Amino acid sequence: MFYVAYTAGDGKAANRPVTFLFNGGPGSSSMWLHMGSVGPVRVANQGDQPIPPPPYSTVANEYSLLDKSDLVFIDAPGTGYSQLVGEAKGKDFYGVDQDAEAFAKFITRYVGDNHRWNSPKFLFGESYGTTRSAVLARQLQDEGMELNGIVLMSSILDFSVWANTGVDHGYIVNLPT
Image (cartoon, rainbow, N blue to C red; front, side, top):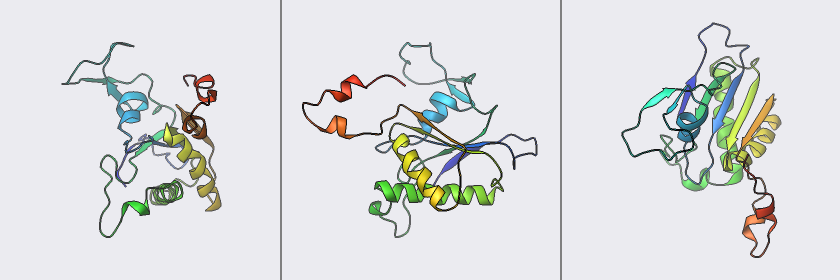
């Protein structure tokens, strides 16, 4: 699994918060959160105006979370730079439980390799990443890792309201988040 991590260089990483960020899908890498939302730089835009065609320029992101937490942007298997290799098949990763297991393995390894067990740990999911966060939190907890919080952006936790023809509930509760 491919990731990009931004960490503070103050030598106190063991106690500094770390946030694991990921987009949803289908097939979406973490690039949208990385370059369009909370990374240390973002694509320059004019507020709510459409972004013109490339080439794009970047600016320092005044809304980045890096001043509060180290940031680890994760690309799900088969998205962005995360690729299936060797004998891996899509069915090994493309399912609710398989997806959560892959992310749990990645996060556990990252925490261990980087000596972050004492760091406050957060999940930050966008779109399907909010559903992933709910399943992933349980998976991590079952494996002995406690989280300090979860951020759900553009959440969708109940897909049934969109799947049933004639059900207006989805339109009633579809508020920007």
